[in-house]
Length: 53
Ligand SMILES: [Zn+2]
Image 1 (cartoon, helix red, strand yellow):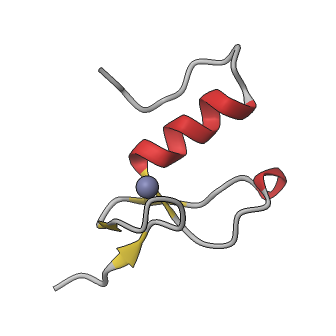
Image 2 (cartoon, protein in one colour):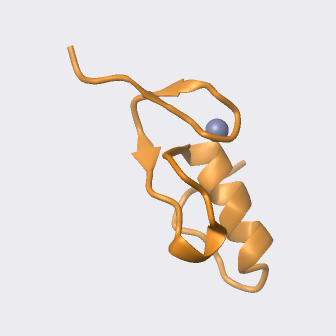
Image 3 (spheres, protein in one colour):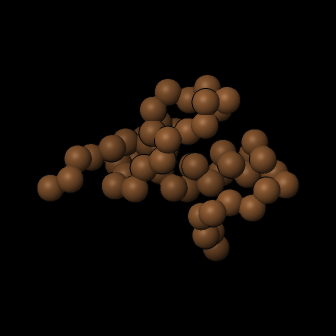
């Protein structure tokens, strides 16, 4: 079994984890949802790579 990771923001266990950008001042890993939200938060003009509905 693969190693489990927990999202720092929503505390969900996630198999797909993303490293936050240094400027986000987040210590830990993020799930795809929170990563996308942070991206949108910090870079509102840019489109993320992650597909959200
Ligand atoms: Zn999350």
